[in-house]
Image (cartoon, rainbow over all chains, first blue to last red; front, side, top):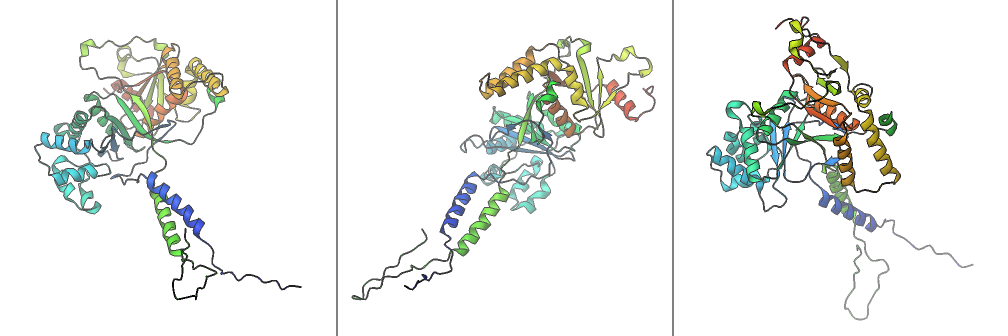
Length: 212
Length: 222
């Protein structure tokens, strides 16, 4: 009988396929990732059955915190060449006779999240180096009738980008008058179509319920 | 990919073919990738937020030009968002001059559940709801093949052609929350209400809410 020789194998596992899969997943995630932005206020949006996704551009979002503070976020337009945000800030600067430097404009253009800063504090805010330095300025956009900066933001945004849409993101617990104030401001500027940002509700309505 | 075959060069005829090419230890790389994947998975916002469209009636600046549309009072449904997530409704319309001493008709309390406001709206909106359901049934069964856009368009057409459904007016008391507002609009979409709009609350309606919630016991206080 011939001797059966077992080949001496190293106990090492070949990790090549695993690395390959990981690389693929990683590339996919990196390419599709849209970073979750940290908002200045924590907002739990109400639920609805609407399935329409939020638009990617031509959109300004009013974030209304439960304490009634209003924050605003806009996008840069369908193409990075449009640079809508910087133009809007320039326009705002003109109205309040504030001269923004190139660096400040660039900083504003890049800022990824909503902001609620009185325009007079904008320079200080943009000079801040990190979140910690900037956060104290996030006190909400003034909306009272004597100094209605929110209306001015809407006006400038519409001037720079006439196709801009308004969407409202509020917390379920936000008192309605705070929302109404924003709606009124928008309606004063002849914007009557809004989008309310909601989360998709898991419950499904069955046909029988409707038919009865 | 991960194997590097080393060839020994030169040194005369002393060539030794290696049986097992040396492996590169990939464990640190795998560790790193695991970490990155976890990071990206956690920070990626996969579920995009959804939006609900709403059109508010235009503000009328010139009061003289304002002529309110004539709607049969029987079709009118007034829904009032009250404080503490409470919900009220009353049918028809209230003319404050018809009631002496500000004693207004009482409000009927509802809730946001499927048996509350949805039941009421579906009852009022039977014909239209059935039409929409039949239409969607046809699509589901494949009798009608339409694109997503024309489905939405057809439903919109059904809604605007309808002349039996209720005319819902939504009003918010000052203590209502934004969540209530979204809930009630959502309810309109679920029940397929063709005509609804959001209007400002009138002073007598505020009184009615206060009376219903027990904020003022006597309505006679002016």
